[in-house]
Image (cartoon, rainbow, N blue to C red):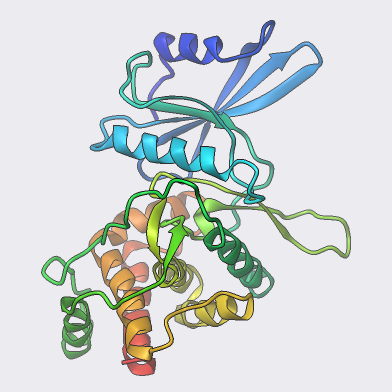
Length: 310
């Protein structure tokens, strides 16, 4: 985490209301690519919070921040609980680093195994709501995050199973109905109110990190969340999420081979960045999710996919 420089402080201050000032900054953990800070803003009546997202030496930072700013703008008023855009400096014209300033959402990320049977349906319903958004201006088409030639087969994996999985994504993408995608929808980007009124149960209070918002198949967002659930909570939860999505009213590809394509594509994409994927989870307390443990869960998940749908 880099220090918040004077140029950034001045830039943030210019976007505050008259009489407001920054009274405290706090580093937020859990991200992979960006520095995140919670800014406490002193107001005439007390305080309010903003979040600063800065990309330090990150390739394509301008593109990521422009995408996120566009997504937050189009989501305003849709009912999807996304942050509100305050300001963006995608080229670091005013700040030390490319940055985005947004409103702060209540709640916190929950990565524990306990209680996931009640939270998975909430995730599914939220994703259905995201896919129901019909923006006046479409975001750009999704970008595939792997190729058949860049997949990294985990140590000890069944070579025949992985070879078959790789062959799945060598084929052209199947036809699909286009939807608005978050593109990185997974438990690490969803905030929960974990202490709701007695009988209400948990609820989602926010969905963050819209830098990869795209236009593409609902199956791809479902596949990405499925992979993350499989790595966090075991392959069975990865297999379960597609069912939960459909139970919530979502529509996926009708053909099993088409579903397999998207789910295997996302699982294999994860093979290239297992170390990075597990890092924020370990920082959040899931220390048992070592790189090796995540690799083993990924292998088990891909094997299960090939057995169930392949």
